[in-house]
Length: 140
Image (cartoon, rainbow, N blue to C red; front, side):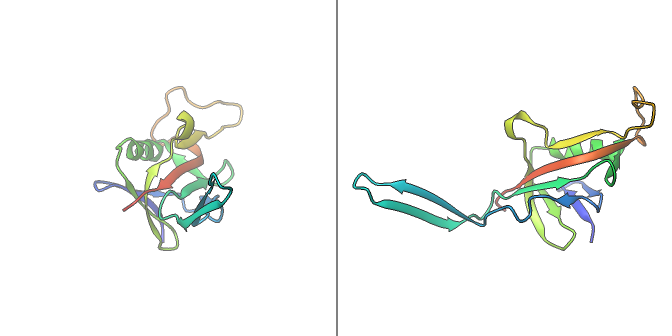
């Protein structure tokens, strides 16, 4: 099954060799610890239903994307609505682009050509290295 990111109007198939870097780092239970005035500890523990970070990582050696597809990916993130992420293994997530601390949710760079920094005005077929896609799961 392909890795796709979709809105209600359009869908984009992402490179299949992206690595979900933080898949096992997320804690499905959250906890808040508070101390009362009498010295008793209050522990609030419950399931985290959403808020899971989903970070896909690529790299120059294995994940490239055409400029046309990169612009389509950025346009999906500019919609301002939740997107549907269909993972390789059949799981589906409702996500938003994760833009923490003013950082872009997609990190990419022109694919380096030996002895050249790339075209000043690249065509839609120019290749880009897809370094990272940062998403966050949101309520359905």
